[in-house]
Image (tube, rainbow, N blue to C red; front, side, top):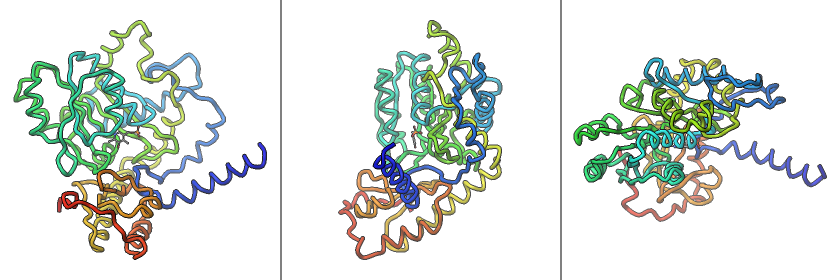
Length: 383
Ligand SMILES: *Cc1c(COP(=O)(O)O)cnc(C)c1O
């Protein structure tokens, strides 16, 4: 490496470590330490193929992957001996796999998802060439069930594929799949499939027993992101489905071989060990306590913002605090995601009270106070 390359790399590393200090706008835990596992990074491990079927080579970590899947199967009350899943590259791949499965089950199915849905879904539906309809979302980001009801009624002859959000990207709203199931019953929909995109909020909601979206509530598949609440330096996730569905995929695409049951070929073998390590080391109780701390911090942040006159609000059981988009300078420093005049901070594990205080100080600073002009209808607060 020549001098400038070296300098570039050093500058990049410095930048990462300094920008991490004001990273509160995106959902990624920073509370992890996998240094005990670093020796693994000397090897090229690969979990290619089905996690339940060991490959010929021993350079894989499928034992750990199975343990991780089984942890989530228990957490989401998957039907006994009838679940399957794998560690993905993230929530988006999980959504893609679930929609793929739904399409194989119901090739004539219509996909319904709310306008507050993560961008990966629209792309996945397009990749899979599935017909879809976008349902209105209410002000807090939840699916408008009346709009869903009317739309399903119009297409009642087709199988229904629902993409439900368990924590929307902007406001962490949760779609109520129990209510959605009732709508499907009202119209006597024969064939239906509900996928829960729980990438953001799935893990902590079920740890806190605030779960209305698991398999016992009517989910057919669930996706979570591993680098969000649990935390990982490498993005990852988990997709969990009913095994009898997945077996059908095996049959319908038998020409590619029964072992090739995942979306990608070569698969990350390090992230399953990371997730396993976090689950074992922190434990269910430890993760639960972490979730409680996140909720408390979110309540604190919401209150502090309201105290200085900002119309901040949260959905129930949310660690996302939403408020009118502040000045560009603040958005850049605190790396805030903004959409339609709103920004948010997400109190993931690792976000501290000091960071919240310092963020509030920045907002109070006269030099930063030019809020963007926010139209009246956006100053909505659910409190
Ligand atoms: C983060 C997120 C995703 C995508 O997950 P990745 O891990 O980034 O691929 C999908 N849906 C929701 C609601 C999310 O918050």
